[in-house]
Every structure is written in structure tokens, then in C-alpha cells.
Image 1 (cartoon, rainbow, N blue to C red):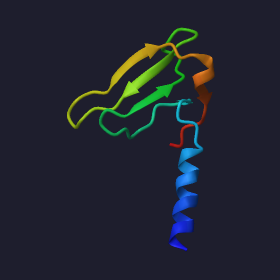
Image 2 (image 1 turned 90 degrees about the vertical axis):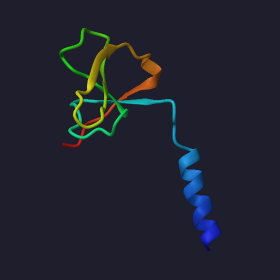
Image 3 (image 1 turned 135 degrees about the vertical axis):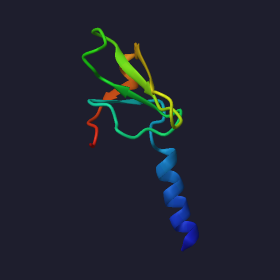
Length: 80
């Protein structure tokens, strides 16, 4: 039974699209150090999204406007 459950869980992880980037509508409140989130924000020009990189305690997050190819991006909603 454990082997069957392990095989199902493993197949779920291998079937997920790993190359797609999720674009959030708002910046997440919590980001782990060096974790990256893409945010569709009005502060960036048209055709670009804000790349937010989490920082260790005491430092500010890094924010930069970057261009993503259309086939790699998908629009999602952030959960506050």
C-alpha cells in the first residue's frame, strides 16, 4: 500500500509544469530568503513585471522590472 501511495505522489510531482512562472497580482507578505515572486504592478512599464526577491532578516527585498516571455507566464491571484 505504501508503494502505491508513493508512486501516486511521485507521479503528481513529475506531471507538474516546472517551466511556467506564476505572476501574482499583489506582492506577497512573506517571502523566504532568496525566494523569487513575479508581480504584475503599476510601477513597472507595460510589458514588464516586477521581480521580487526575498532577503534575510534585517535586509530589504530586491525589486526589479523584468520582461518574461508570454509562454512562460501565467496570471494568478495572491492569497493575502
